[in-house]
Length: 223
Image (cartoon, rainbow, N blue to C red; front, side, top):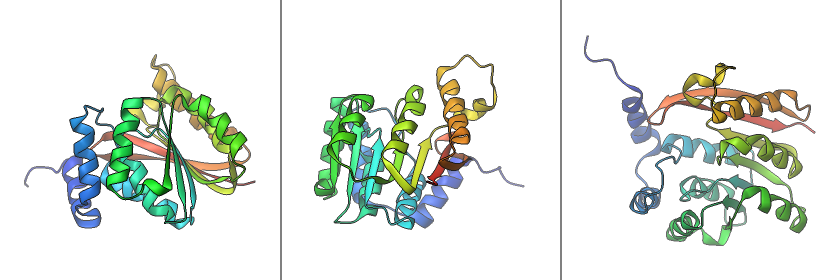
């Protein structure tokens, strides 16, 4: 037998076969690297999964908590269509500037609203200014605040809203209740919050690939 394949090789095959090259997305990743943003964007096949999930529920109003350089934002903005919008929250002004340029290059600036500052400061403002609930919420920011972000996702949702929380498996450490790691503790907390919330029905999936061993939670608002 030959060498055993590794996760990154499989991801490379899946991406080349099912996602393909994309000049705007490739340019966004290159710009993020040039600006020294941390290389924590979703993988291309995960980005397309976000896009497909948004299209499956006919999302026209999307909230993203954690913009980084706008890579996942572009995937989501494509999904909502010309009449839709993505409100995306980014704490770091420098990251938001890179994201704005990436979104503009992709021709999607008219449907993307980047809010700069702490998400827990911006979310109450969004609740006051617009009564339109979000159809999909993607949570991918500082993990320690995930449970608070989940509460806001519920407050800004309607029956049928999809909520996705990224990076909850933490290399498998999420199963360890005694590990002294704040991100692991936060992941356990948000998963337990989903399980305890009667208005949510959710699950979580482990993933392996070019980003290592991790996973995401996905839930639907039931009432």
